[in-house]
Length: 312
Image 1 (cartoon, one colour):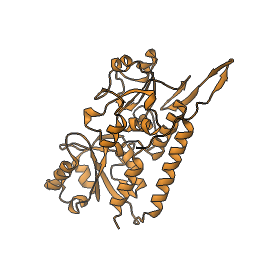
Image 2 (cartoon, helix red, strand yellow):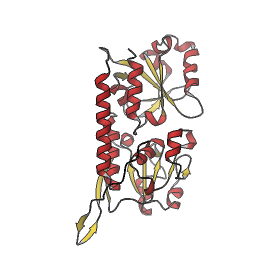
Image 3 (cartoon, one colour):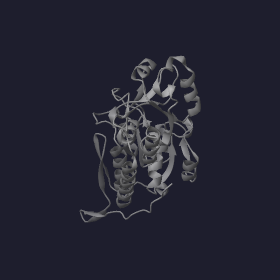
Image 4 (cartoon, helix red, strand yellow):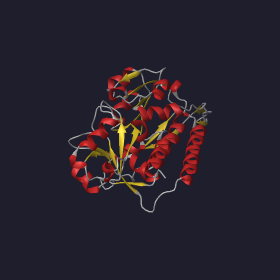
């Protein structure tokens, strides 16, 4: 886990008073902060890790939405050891208000639901400002396909919000350089590897579509998501569609009560999948949930995928 020292807050002069103020784009809203938040809450493991790599634990009063889905690994457990988990799953409005929060870092289907009790609009009367995960904006507005740039944008915007913009920019520049150096060493084939993302479900598979981060990670590693025609973020498709697309590699997202090995065994032992290239050649690769969703571990995820796609 990388922690970054806090940078200086830029001060601007408004009407003779010193005010730390900044504005960022959050989905279809412009959000203005008069001062950096001091009592922040983040939802989900990947969003919380963004806060951690920016060194913002001293600005946080807790986090939500991790242990309810068994997503906390050893590295993250150490990082959040000093913070309480205020809700194991999505937080209620009462949880956030009760913690006297002034900021909530969440996303649509990452702690908030369209029409739910916790939204930027419902929290505004309580003085809780919300920054929305960029990848999740597809649930409320038109948006381009998922991109690693979504994750970079979130880190930079968090840097602006909390007055650590220089640190955030340096972190993103480091990620860009690390990824460029790695991709220069990878020898890919003439055609992208056909890849299916298996998140969960046996009767019907839950998978990543065009607007979900794994599509961007797969492309960066020299593959193509066979479900990129599924114009959603995460959602359910049919096994018939998977068989028809005949993926060469299956990416398993590891979290929850059903292990990655159990998911692989399900596919390997089911006669309905016997003709899928990935099953015939036993080509499975596992990503942890925190790697497959937008966050700092996306860089390692691309490396893991590329090494699985192009083993030679």
